[in-house]
Each structure stands twice: as structure tokens, then as C-alpha cells.
Amino acid sequence: MAKLVLSLDGVVIKEVQLTKDKTTLGRRPYNDIVIDNLAVSGEHAVLQMIGAEVFIEDLNSTNGTYINGKAVKKQQLRANDVIEIGKYKVKFLADEHQDYEKTMILKPGQSLPGIAQPAAPLQSPSGFGNFPLPGQAAPVGPASIRVMNGAAAGREVPLTKVVTTVGKPGVQVASITKRPTGYVFAHVEGSQRPSINGAPLGPDAVPLKHGDTIELAGTQMQFVQN
Image 1 (cartoon, rainbow, N blue to C red):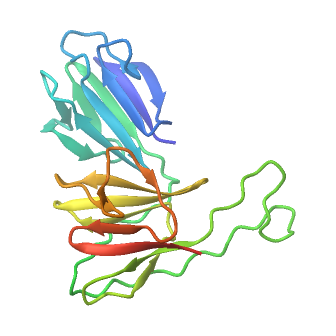
Image 2: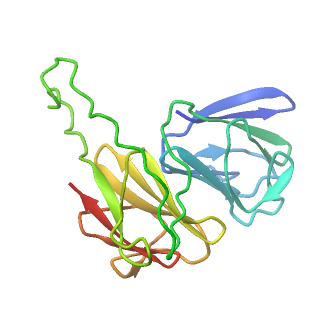
């Protein structure tokens, strides 16, 4: 599990595990991570966790948010990145065991890249096939996205990883994340939000169901769950 290590002048003050989709940071006491210092704005920044990826966004703070010495507005965090807020430093420690894949760029008129075959389904320790053990949720079934337009129309891309990001980096990117309860769709990057079933996507991740239609960076896709 990813975590943050907050320090001041080289002295570690606290460690915080990232367990929520959104973690707020600021001077006000209602933040998830409170830094009681006048150099820190009341609502300074927010960290958003999408699958295995963590993004930080500055909330128009007075003194800004810096990563490795560079001012940022919104940026994905990498292992060992150092967030600087005033005199405080927050080191990001990533979970190296998360399983995710890089952004898949879908462009109308271009073929899709080769996709690895899905891994074999996990079996229960009892050896009696793929049935869940008592007290465990049933495993989420396989799913894919089907391209609806362009030269790649009709192609299906299996969702074999914990999180798959799709779109055009720097223009519009979204993610499809596999959770124990099902698949969810979320906006990652771009001023214009993708749409699902014709409606613009909001700030929070939304659950996907079989047949949902996604439009992203000029590409129309359909979510298919077996």
C-alpha cells in the first residue's frame, strides 16, 4: 500500500497510509493530513488514488505545491517523489506490488497494440476450482472494451490488469480500474471530461456495467463484461 512520509528539517513527523480514493492536505483541521503552519493553505492539495496510480493536485494554494523542486498544478506521483509544501517535505513511497499497465493510446484510424493473454484465474487454496471461500466475495469476472469507431472498430481489448488507462496523454486520459466489487471508470487527465452513455463524467469514479458506452478523445468504446 502506498504511503506518505511527512518530515520537517529532516525529522520524520508522521507516516500516512493512502487508503482512500481522495486524501486532502492542508492547514484546516478537517483535512485528512493536517499541517498546522501558516505557509500551508487551509485546503492546500488533494491526492487522488486511481487503482495503482496516485495523482496530486494543488488547490490554488497561496504558496504552491512542488514536486522534486518543480511547481506543479496536477501530476502523477512516482516512487520516491518528494512533495514540498512550505518548509515541509512529503515523500511518496509507492506500493511496488501493485499490478498495472501503461496508458493505452487509442486513435481512430490506427490498429490497437498487441494485448497479452489474460492470466489464469486464481483457484481457492482448498483446490476445489474457482469458487470463493466462505465469507469471501465472488471474484469479478473478465471484461474488455470494444472499439466502436475508426479503423480499429470491432476490436476488443481485454482488461487484464488492475488498472488500464486509455486515451491520448496530454489531451484526455481516463482509467478503468478492477475492484473487488467490479470495474469503475474515472477521469485522469484533460480539460474535457470523457462521457459515459452520453453524459459527461463527474469528478468521482463511476461503476461500469455491461453495455455502457464510453467516448474518450474521439474514440467510442463499449464496456463488455462476460
